[in-house]
Length: 136
Image (tube, rainbow, N blue to C red):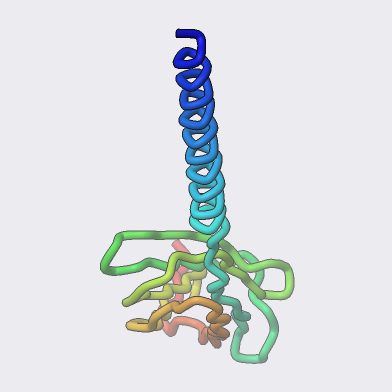
């Protein structure tokens, strides 16, 4: 009887060891798969400079980037030198980029795509609106 009990204990230990190994391999597999999924980021960006007729940078101009198919939207404004940068953007298409500033008509660039690693330069030259406000 003792002999069969001893064989049964050895069998249980082998099954337990196999189960532990399977759990370990499963954990390692999911860790590797999970780190790949979370490690992905988009390296797509849109940068540029907004200038006036004389080539001077326009600080404080509004920049709106919108993905027309997903509805994603991000907004920024230009810095002191008229430059702007939109980084880590979702990939896809079609995108629309809109620039507005008081006293200048709105300018739009449409129907472009952002793919992995894209660094798009989108400069705008704004010309003053012909409509001037009159004094009251």
